[in-house]
Length: 133
Image (cartoon, rainbow, N blue to C red; front, side, top):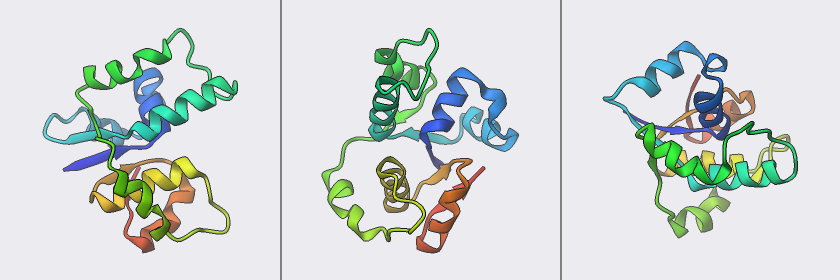
């Protein structure tokens, strides 16, 4: 199976895996699964870290892509069509976060199951999102 990590899922897996559901931990650790991370997540982490909204402890933010590949996560290639076609994802009145919307849209477009504990994401299942926690 092919999965896309939500940003918090990636952070928790690398820094505090106890915050993940047991199901998600098993999926990530199963070598038969393909685990992807989007460059959008690295951008989100960098911005939130810069704004003081995300403490990475002693982790060097510049090492995040290397950490992802050490865990055998594949970094999705940048696909400009993903960015320009995000307008196809309906806006939800109570959820307009651009990072989340891009991850949701990418998961739908690439037929990836999004591993996220964000309850707000459930409303996108009617739009084709496959979500697991």
